[in-house]
Length: 177
Length: 108
Image 1: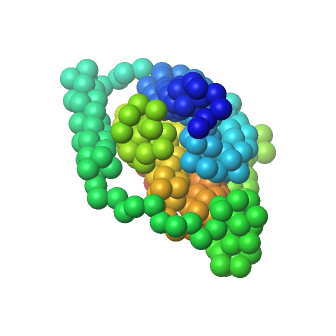
Image 2: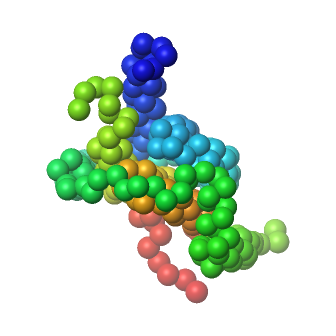
């Protein structure tokens, strides 16, 4: 038995907090009017995702999520916000057209959410298989250097090409004046 | 399935991943700046990663495969953000605007 009687409820409450962080962050990221708030919402959503990865037995990926998404991706997007014009423009077209597009967006995303959530709720999921490894950092490292060494090398090539491409794209067209 | 068993069931994670995907697609349609669309794309990446991790935790025989796949997704999305932001900066330098409606002419 668990040593502390309410520990299951505490774990469930923490899970609820993590889910609320993820959902709230995603809503802020999508709905807020100013872009910098929406970047902050993305960071909040990634923090919640890191908690979810912790619940899914992977503390390594939780740390990587914080390190890469909040530490690198969000900061890079903030640099992009600082270098360009930031906010959403004022509504210029007709209001009826704007409402129509909002309705289309809600309809499409609602249909996708309903369909996939229905699949997830009612699908015939296979039972838990017997784990071959423990999924620890050591097992990940061994798999990365044996079974998945080719994709591991390829992703480093992709990152190198991305760095060079980003440099070339952002350099070209810069005027001397 | 009682209330305290929700973190041990795949259903909550799958529904949450569906929500993230739907939010990302909603933002992709609604946003009127390129950076806003980029943020929505990141939400779609996050939904895919969460789905991979859920299947990895509850159904896969080898728990390290899904973690490696999610690591690759993180690397790909970092590369995508770098490229997309440099394109956005180059576009802004040429057009003085990053609103997709105004980027309507091709120029070599």
